[in-house]
Length: 495
View 1 (tube, rainbow, N blue to C red):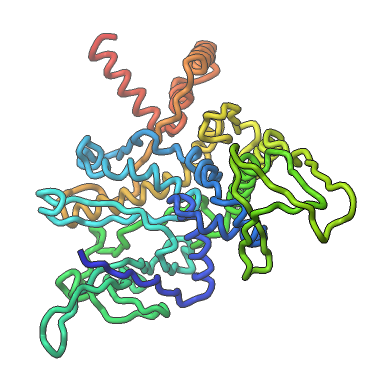
View 2: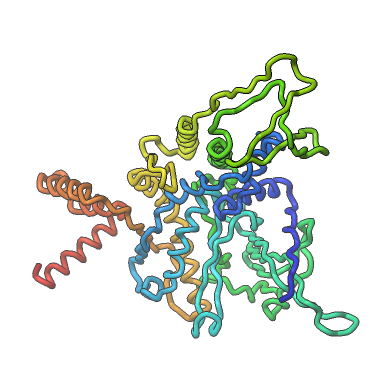
């Protein structure tokens, strides 16, 4: 197998985008589990090189950013319910429908959105014969560190120019011999440009290391030239062009990027990992009495790091070793001294201090201390997590924002299904997404039902309000429809 060398990712044209990408890349690595270099950089910022080496391998077992965002990403823990008031959308929602591949991926996507504050969900058409005999749609998470976007001043948080950095393999023909050369790994960009609605463009270009666009490679990869004007395929039924992706924001801020939001949690997560690395160092290297000698030297010491400023001497020992001391010729006169100091740090108290620090860091993510739970079981994988009440509160806060983007995404999925798969789905914005609530415990569920039944019996709550209490993510219209459906079924089956 040939070993291909992947070139470094090209720079962006603007310094602000390079800074944004550096921050987002760090957050992505912390979610991917490839963040050891970031932790090592944090150690180097706080410690001298000799102390970093003395601590040994850093502890990657604690990652507050990953833990907290995973605990809060609960909108898609079950498959959401998608409805449309006036159309049959089973092609989307059926067991083998077009949305079934989306929802499992959205569990990871929501966590990435909460951590990086933005992410794109892109829709791709897969032709017949590749994954499905009739063709299908596929979905991808695109993180912001691979994106350059532009937006209209009238809608600054919605992109109308999309540029995605992707690695591709390209074989070129030798101009002298006419033979095909060995494949090369290059950086390319997928460009969707609808700034001019009458002349939209989709093309694939090579990108140079300085961020400038190179050769148009659309024909090499798609077999046709750039799709411009009337050839641009991504259009609604009314002819209006769209980009086959949706930019999700963790919060509606009216800005295209919010990359530095919640940075205190990112920095705190790295500092927490640093403290846990120090705790591990204490347990394995410092939780014993520090011994000292005066007026003696130890025979057999091996000199280390002589070329460095911080030189040291060491000797290997075990339980069968005998240490031989001799009088220090340059030392003080009189009786030599041998003694020890007690450990300067109690590992148990130090861990309590770390947990207190982590709780303060979690509060930077707008999490109340009453909604945090801490495990005292040393076998537990996480010392800090979000309670069920905290997850329900986060779900209520997140649902309105994510529903807007999910509805827009489904609208574009329907349009692409009509274009490429020959469907006849509605392309309006009337799709409604309902998220399954986090289940209550048996006791909580019984208390809620009893309270609702008493309020309804007393005339203080309508059946519609009662249904909404039992199904928190349901609006009044949907509640009426569901109650009518229940009434009809009860009549049908004489219940």
